[in-house]
Image (cartoon, rainbow, N blue to C red; front, side, top):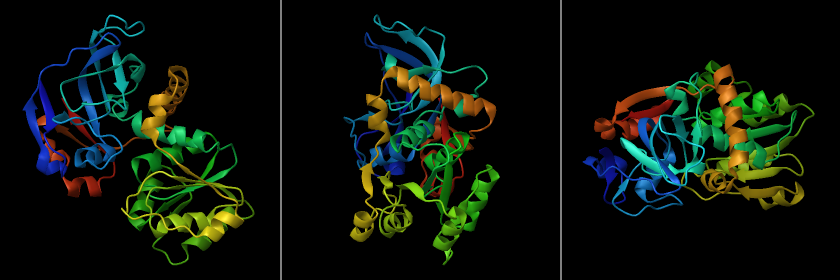
Length: 325
């Protein structure tokens, strides 16, 4: 089968290549899926660089999320059948014509959900939904997050709104604000404006921020912490700046803030099938009703893997880049 493979860790466009790999055979508790579309996520690219929390054995096939059709099942598989259209995330080696995954990581998707949405439905939107529950956010409360025009950020804003949770979405350019507005997302703040924190306070009025989600690190972490309400929770989700978080201890002490780290992939793997199915059912409902929009920037054939992982494209994209097997 065709696959996007790497033999060493490094810059994705340097180490990835199109290879001819053996078609994998499912173990007793696994299914094999014939891939239709697979997503390219930031954590996939970090994995290839050797900079993620999980390091595969080399040589390795890239990718961790896809939609496809089951074409073989292991002897112990009970609830999935050959011919079912399914989605999977937090799995391995999806940038290929076939991949295998444990039954509990595979979920059936309805016909009304298009392939382009199903291929990216679980990883980022599920992370956003798990994050909402991780922070115990309730209807009427406020959450502030930076890098809000990223895949998780956009999903967080839309899924929170569907639960009547208020978001303040911090981005770093007017173009990013327009991008969020085009998706119907409200309360968007451009942090390049000098008085952006005053804009946040004006939106809040007498309310307080119950939770903050930091995906950047560096000084941006402290910016969010300074706006957090008393007794609030601060979650570290990512470190896009590559810099350690800078946090003023007076904010932590006198706000009596709680600091947590959130790793969606780990939480997803440890979550019960029933609980995950509950969240995925919500994602499917939000997706089919239009409350959740998942834009696509481009679709590339596997043979064009180098173009698909190009740094310039990945940095400027407004939607997900997908691979067609």
